[in-house]
Length: 238
Image (tube, rainbow, N blue to C red; front, side, top):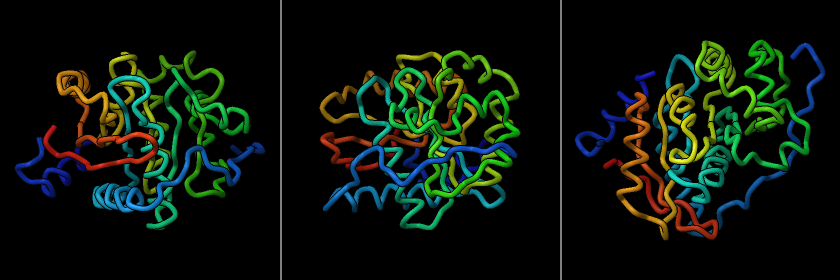
């Protein structure tokens, strides 16, 4: 999947471095919404992401941190929400972090990422009545992670991009799970989330190189100022 990367390079120039009954996501939020100046920061992030939309199908974007606790889930979730609610895009947000899945989604007993990986056909008939459409990790995502290495995973992503303009995939931390790069390779591009107070460029560069070694298109990074005051800026120079 390289079209989005080509579009990104063009924009950034030289600065780039089920028929079954399915329970569905209710109207609840996983994280606080940005307020004040934070809203403007997220609007700019969403606008940059919007410019990367493909014409012939939906776009798959992964969000990952180098280490745990840097706020990748918060960033990806709010970016998905703004794309859906403010920009009118059809968005699916997937909890792909099997190391630390969102408990609230598991409690909702939703159609899960784990279930879809085992039977991608369910994607074609699932009832989508919320935007963004939230897909939890499921109870056995860790047990099915071997599917990321076969044709099931790209088949699932392909079906999802037929129904959504953007598929936002929240990934495990790059330097914690060796499966992250494998999952990220199925995306059109990945944004690395970095918490400002833990900002060490050698760690960031290690994370970036780990992804690039697997052929992942790293589009840039989002600096998380924490306390839900995201994102300061999206960098192009990785």
